[in-house]
Length: 272
Image (cartoon, rainbow, N blue to C red; front, side):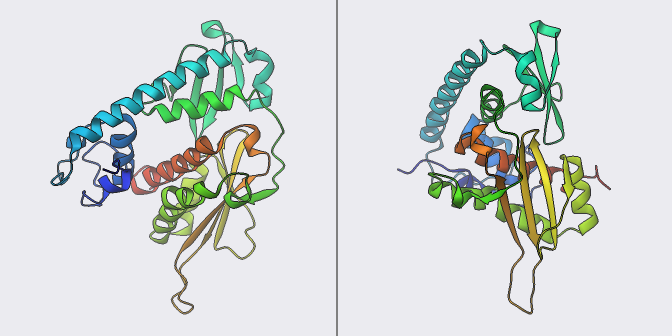
């Protein structure tokens, strides 16, 4: 039997992003269930008929154990690093508190990372993938400065399997989100996550967003054209040095988190 995917869960919700589950979107809820073992019952409207959720949850728990083991290995990997030396190369600030920690921003949120603790805006992250992303970033030690020479996912090595994943969990979601928003409101959200407007070669809107200090992502948005039968579309480009900091799995997840944050901000009252 195929393993449950976040989209499988989303299709069993009303897909209204009502947030009664405690997550900003139905997709974020589905990902949390599949990736971190959050109870599907947190959605009061979900239809679980016809699936063996017990089997799938067992798989999820096994995956969570693997993720936690991987996080432990990443902590060991960063243990010998001299945070004070690598901080400038990561766009971070070094603090001597807690025997040394790095302070940097992640989609407009403050990360505090020591060799034993990690918080985002003062809270421990619920999703192990956030920890994996952030520890991987620090473990890189800082490499090439971003060149702002932009390439698509398809141009990165061994990325064929990630192209559709990026489209599903980031680009297509942002296109649907932006379609319902005014340009000033979209830009307010982009500014809140650490982005700035830029030229986009014919795009309706273009911005460079610092997902992490050395991980800029170039977001291009073309609005729908009924006359040309052209749907709303988003393309995300990456700096050509990006794999010096993150592996492909973490890179795609960072873009997914970009879509999560933009959805949370634009659908909330925060920017109004």
